[in-house]
Image (cartoon, rainbow, N blue to C red; front, side, top):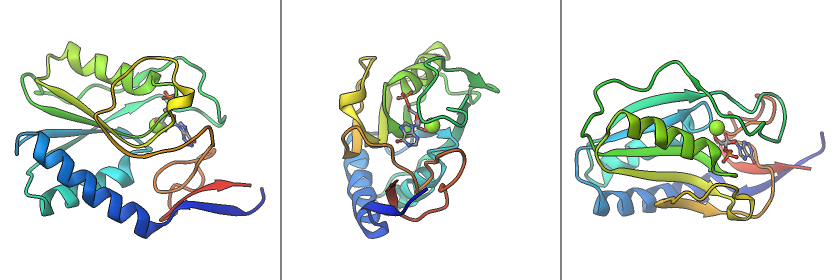
Length: 173
Ligand code: IMP
Ligand code: MG
């Protein structure tokens, strides 16, 4: 593997997360449940939750785990839930949070699982959106950054489980 090119620095991300939290707080009721998709969204959820607090929201935090990409850069296309959906979400306003929306399959699948549990209003949020790669039409209500067709790592996102710890988002050259 070659060098790393920084796309969004830690400071870029922090500023955008703060602005997203303000957008979310002005749209959602004060009490809602954030449901993050593991593992990729863990870092984003942790920062977004604290930005939401500063913006005056009081989110609960839950996670769901979807079957991962494995070690490849391309999704197999088949998404699977590992474990269960969070309990007691019926009627609750939910903000579904993922790191990246690519084909749309993961977030669409997670949203369908939550709707089956009869959650209340469901909003979606992704730190990164790759609209050029979309295969399934899915509305993303809150987007951190739009990017082209590039494979990124860092800030929770991985390549073969590496780079999740990086404080910035970059591309491996
Ligand atoms: P989708 O199901 O094709 O929309 O893919 C979304 C999932 O794949 C996200 O939850 C990410 O974890 C992962 N993913 C998509 N693009 C990238 C990338 O560029 N780097 C790392 N993970 C990615
Ligand atoms: Mg993921």
